[in-house]
Length: 374
Image (cartoon, rainbow, N blue to C red; front, top):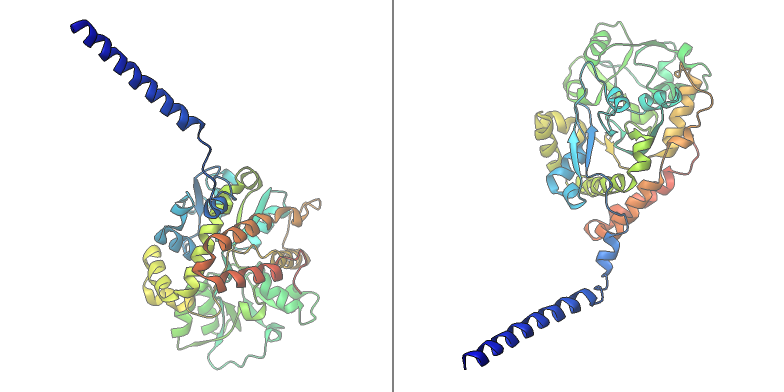
């Protein structure tokens, strides 16, 4: 009996092993599950090549990054943004040139264009501010008739601000640097003080000075940079061209997150003020002064046509001191990555804000024709 029991036990063990092997085999050979529409869409962008992106967004930071972090949009895309601050010794563009950051979003448009003009291989692939809330001030009571009022006057503004020099050109002045007495190199508080003392007729102020200008009893905001040249292209998203070429999926996932953040921002500006005030350690009143002003516009779109216009104005006014004439600016603007990101975001998250994505598609079609805006 003992012998037959042992044989029975061995048979049972053998059957169990064979059963497990059959089960494993059936698991390996089972056909893959058919992808659903949702999983098919999710795979269209491809996996990010790198999941951490080193980013400089200046001292004022980027409200879309603030929202995308807060709402988990970057996490949804498998992306982490590592903020790298600039300092006195390392400007944003210097950080980009040295590879200490991968993307810069708050260094304006003229700065990256100047680098590109010198042969530095950078690519503009997206945007941050279409236009900042940058007021033009004059002594209280000054009558404003338009940018033609600059002609023959003292204006405190750097000629890198192509919206102003371009605006003067649009009045028919062929030499805008000579038609106006531009006072350059001043910080915004000193520029405001010059207007107060009557040492200058007009001065451009930064987005961060809106609250001061609005509450001033000595100066008026007579116009805005965005009124002189609408959608002039304030701050572009820029990276070294090699980074763009080597990490296209990463950048598309980044822009998907930022598009969702832009949709949220446009529907929830009051909350965006609170979030960004906390992120920048500023008061809500300070942030609201510019963020809730109609002249402040953020958009992820690369804004190709406005960038081309900026290039032409800066070139015509001699801003590019060390220009490499072989450089073609068109080779340094990539709109394809953004369009893929926009299409994917609309297909995947369009139900969150259908009107927003429709408007973004229309905005892209109007602003990326490859022809400089007039």
